[in-house]
Length: 247
Image (tube, rainbow, N blue to C red; front, side):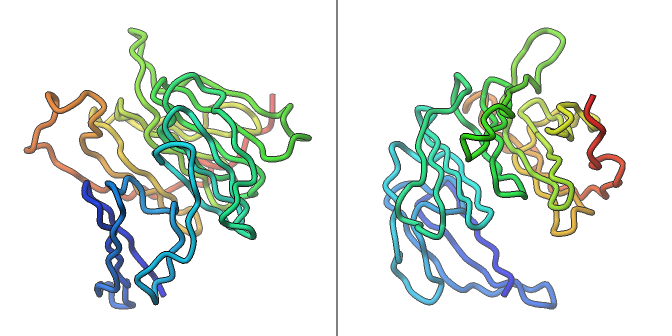
């Protein structure tokens, strides 16, 4: 079954089944105690029931999370990171503070399931590994900054499912592809001059989808109801995402 989940700025999460003809059918609606900021996990739900089957107690409000079974990573307020092994889903495997100094905006698990990337509002990305034996491979780097030293949030990070390279997209309207092993940038997209709010590679990595619209990074005063909210599909060339030889 192909399933689509949607949350808006209320306390409800709506679930649809995507049928083979492309049509959708409503399947369920769940209610949280407060606004739902992301459609991944903070409670565990069985779509056949109306009640959660498990709950994880987080140290702070959940801002972002990602899952690549059995790895789940949650980023909360006050820079907390919670790593969960879904083989034991209600007990955090590790909890620690982000190595980045400012608020976490996004996390993305590696396809190899041995680590994850973190993006923050300070225009930085950190590469983290689960096992202590790989900690020497961790690093962070600056991105999504302009020549005037203006700093923009890293709104989303998406990993290519085959090559393990990844994209970053920010409030500056820029998208970039990166190779963490070679520690270098692979490609920059032309700036769209509007924040990128979400990104994703499809299952085989041949299509890269991204959405454009206001991300509230400058507050209510800069919100314009007439601004277009648009989803784009980009055909991915292998040379743009294939890893490079390390320098």
